[in-house]
Image (cartoon, rainbow, N blue to C red; front, side):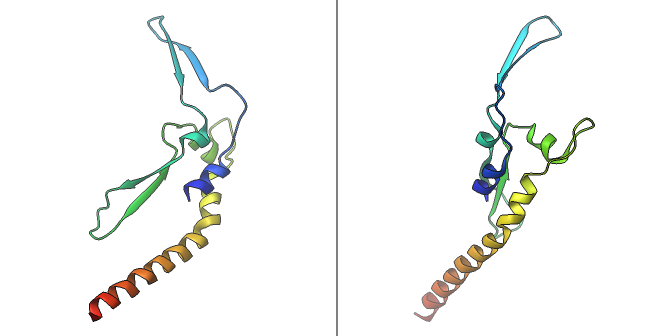
Length: 112
């Protein structure tokens, strides 16, 4: 799923390094990188027992949500949800296959 979201992420050709002036007059800089470089998956503690949960996130690329949902000055251009919707069927099939293998393995172990 992470790879599908990375592939669907909008790409730009503008520089990623930004410079700004702070209130005290000092200069700040930041480079968060490109959106598709920041998309990551991580294991997250689940509130339910016997559950594994993984999360796909945009990491420090906070501006990804501006493109996804739009702003006051920019219309929404969804990219995250369509990528997830496109891959959801394949994900369910993969989970079904892996779960079937685990059940067969547990059944063979229980017979012994």
